[in-house]
Image 1 (cartoon, rainbow, N blue to C red):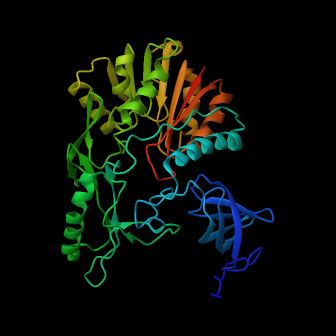
Image 2 (tube, rainbow, N blue to C red):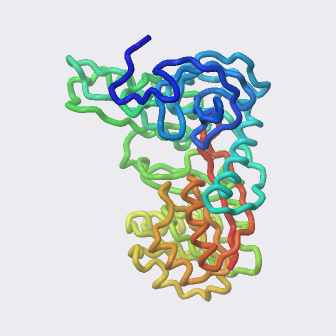
Image 3 (cartoon, rainbow, N blue to C red):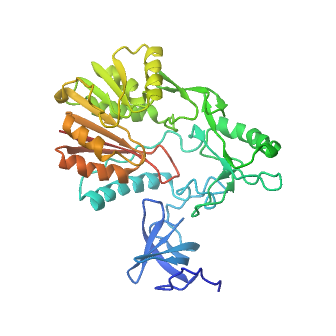
Length: 404
């Protein structure tokens, strides 16, 4: 048996001890959860209901981590992965799980997070599927380490289960066809220019209007329904354009229900929600802490002929200071980064007191954390709707509707 690492704790299992266990559920990180004599063991790449053999590599205070050795009794939901790098590359967690089952588990995990983190027992609507299951990502950012002896090593993504290293990824089946067509050329260019690099770097490949842009500072265009958005290629924009019409349509329907006449888009970026929702409201105000982002939002409003939307660059301490809409007739859409809303923002939102809040999140865990604060501040949860913007991965977007 291989010698254990110095910090390995030998209880309840020895290092690399092989155990058989039945998988009961999936964690929100996409790992299988099983138990041995009541002790929790996490095993990646296995599915609920399966009997598996696993090799333990770490014992924590209340659980163990193990690698999958063999599936002894496979689940009927087990599917053939669409990528030969699945299980090695850390990008996808669910390629071995049939798509209907992926949607069901994502729906269930949102409900479990609400129960466990906030004590909220509320129905979760079935996760809306992506219109495309493969070749849906409009942007990827492979990277590489600094050259060794004048040679560039792997160009790709972080390995599964590790915090360092790179797996070479010559093709990515969840990236759009244009990106995969351009990837060999971009990889070859990096290898040919190896002597130019003194350190590692990250590549950009963003699909835009049938071509691929690799310059972070270049202007690119994305279309959502009949609205076009210009922004810098390296900036954030939702990376599954195929689901965006349904996604923004749901946010619009939730925001304008109940007679609201005004909309505040509190993390407006280049204007995705403010501009796609503008036709449903008398007036729209987009608010951003980034002056550059508000400039793009203004340009996009002008180029699309949208005249009822204004955009404000506000300090984080005074987001609603210049909003003159009556709160009782206003809906607020919030789409914060993965870390969720700051306590300062939530206190300002509660003080403003809009009639409706539509909270869009790429991390349901931080969203549920903020939900608890909003409920304490006088808001009631009305609807929970997940969207699968990221098939075959553990990630999802969740839209929660709250009313005053």
